[in-house]
Image 1: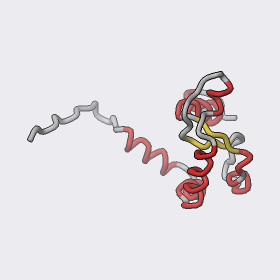
Image 2 (image 1 turned 135 degrees about the vertical axis):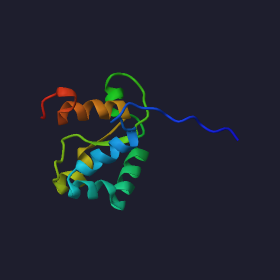
Image 3 (image 1 turned 120 degrees about the horizontal axis):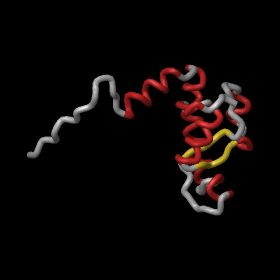
Image 4 (image 1 turned 120 degrees about the vertical axis):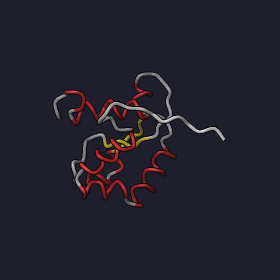
Amino acid sequence: MPVRPPIHRPVGTRDKREADRDADHKRDPAIRALYKSTRWQHARRMFLARHPLCAECQRQGLVSAANAVDHIIPHRGDTDRFWDPDGWQALCASCHSRKTAREDGGFGNPRR
């Protein structure tokens, strides 16, 4: 059976899984618990079933499948805003990443 050759990376470089795990551990434990809850997983699944297309792509005249539920106004730990489905929108991964970076200060953007 063939053996996969080892992956050589520069010292200090981590794979995506490790970086994601570190970012998750930096998040506030109360907010992390909300996103990991069974209630959120069910609500997210049901929302995406009812809204299968990305809202941002649709505004631009494009069609893309949604795979993330975004809080239109960031909840910042406010549980009432977190659970309010009127404040949610379905986004594709690229639109969600772009919006999150813009609002949370990613890539040198100011935090809003």
